[in-house]
Amino acid sequence: MTDESSLRATDVTRTFGDLTALSEVSISIPPGEVVALIGPNGSGKTTLLRVLAGLLSPTEGTVDYEGPDAVRPLGYLPQEPTFRPGFTTRETAAFYARLVDDDPTDLLDRVGLGGVADRRVGALSGGMTRLLGIAQALAGAPPVLALDEPASGLDPGMSELVYDIVDALAEEGHAVVVTSHDLPAVERTADRVVVLDRGEVVAEGTPAELRERTGGPLHETFTSLVGGDQDIVAVRTRGQAE
Image (cartoon, rainbow, N blue to C red; front, side):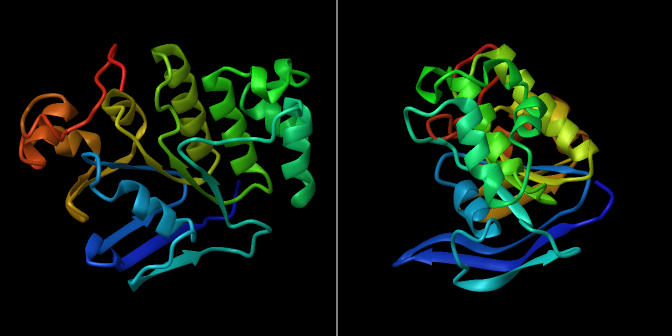
């Protein structure tokens, strides 16, 4: 990709009745970077991602896309992508590709699913289903990608593959925002990390800048930033399931 596109949230607040899920959150997703949203369960990560993706309207504040006109400015991967049963991987990719005049074979090849194009989606592993979800998010070459827990519940090898793809997408020039509990993957892949707690941004910086706060790995900094309550801090360290 050569055109630079970015996404910016300014003073975004989102309420659900009496519950304030986000409070005056401002972040930017620049082209060619991976921005990771991390935080305890219930901190507002998915709500923020859905607001950025246009699936939820902010109660207050604005979300602005800056860049050239695109057939599909933003591609979104939900945390648990689902596809219509009975169809093959190729047929599923073709459905999304037709909507935006894209090539389904290219979409599958980009995420490493070309070899299982004739497999029914119901027979795909969890990791392959997630990769197919990324393929549909890529349909139409959206400049901005919003990925909700792209490697949640996957084994370490598949998780590494998913984040290698995320890294490659940023290198192509996509602006990528991703939520994750997989802090080792975040340390390895993210250019910038935004830490949320109780709907507010409590820290932001590169992984190295955040590690400097405690002198240890990112999960130690994370725990210190959100108060150290191990009962509510849900993170993955290498070799552990979520």
